[in-house]
Image 1 (tube, helix red, strand yellow):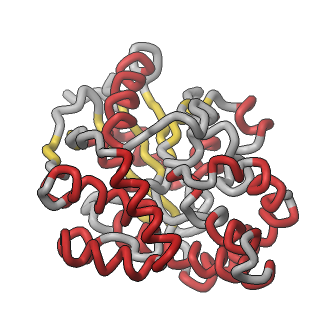
Image 2: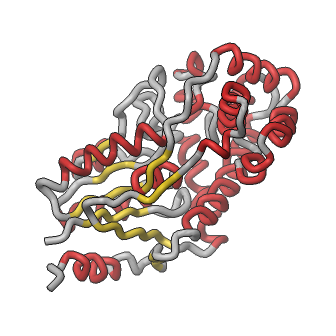
Image 3: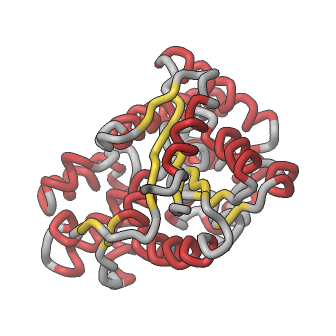
Length: 303
């Protein structure tokens, strides 16, 4: 029987985790996370991890697998995930992968070059620019050093901007020129799918989840990890805004509103990313079970 990796992608708050769990239960298999923040044990509420109950219902990999003191990047994840999948497919015909980090999914399906280590003093200098001159100054510097990266990057994400800059400065060549990718010959088939919510419905889900995160104790979670605030994983939506509140830069209401706004912006970028896949299957909300027929057809032995 053919081996099949079913990848559930799409924007944040679209129901990827629950959909993946339902598929895993149906096929008696496991879920491999492709979320760049759910690796970290310390981050739970702000990363919308599956609940402890869900983690007990279905085995998950790459959730709570690292601490904030460890470094994870797309290239290392891609290598580790492929090694894991090779082992899983000795026992399973179907494995479910779920996550909205398109770069990490790409790293599984394609080779992504391991980027060179950067000089620590460069990162310190760039963080100093961020603190003293702001994100706009960093982005303008990236436009000078690597226009191609600046055109594609999330200009509101200091972690990504600093990463592109530190590699460009350390190596003397544009970060974008180092991101060589080539298609891998994988020992399994792939199917990519996600739930295509109407925009207003998705935005409502994002707003509601933002409120749920605050009610569930996101503020306390941010305080508990404040010693790691310069960690790349914490320079992201949900954490960055609450650090601004803690620093007295904005009010709590402003922080919550910004979390929702920045999450909506992130969802737009995710949709753009996943729509580039020509074979991506977009499902209407409530029609998730229709994917089972497609999966079953791919599992039939080819004559």
